Length: 208
Image (cartoon, rainbow, N blue to C red; front, side, top):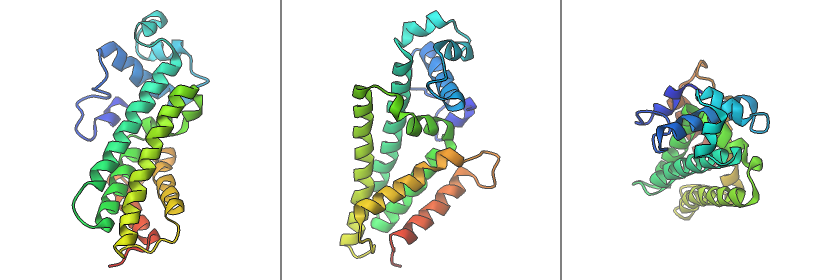
């Protein structure tokens, strides 16, 4: 991942919320290494080398490689959940809110595709306690999207016989963007977001 990838959306530099700067550089390096080689094939020496630091320096900021993955996963899930909550709490009917939610969620997974791949696909590498925490955030994510769809059904805007199943399908569709998105491909993150928002509204049978 180029560090510029994380700056879309207003951040001046990647992972600006992580301090001190050495800890931030290590986290950026870990994202790149995990995405490129996978968590299990990446060593702490790999991460430290990418950050231009010694392996010993890494342990000043992170006790283990898993702690790095947990921090990456927590921040990424928090950001994704915040995007969906903002859409769910926005103005307009269910169709408008679902469109905004999908467009924003997909755009994040495309623009931050390297980070998103690590966040979404390395869950099993976490220990039981950390994994349980992240699964809790995923349940919140599911609940937000499910709530918008339920609102649409109740208002007569959507025709959805199976709300839980449709919620799972919507989230799976959005998350998978991180796996295939290519910055050199034919569509920008905004364009993919708009396409998926239209597809999801068709999926839920949005009226009007």
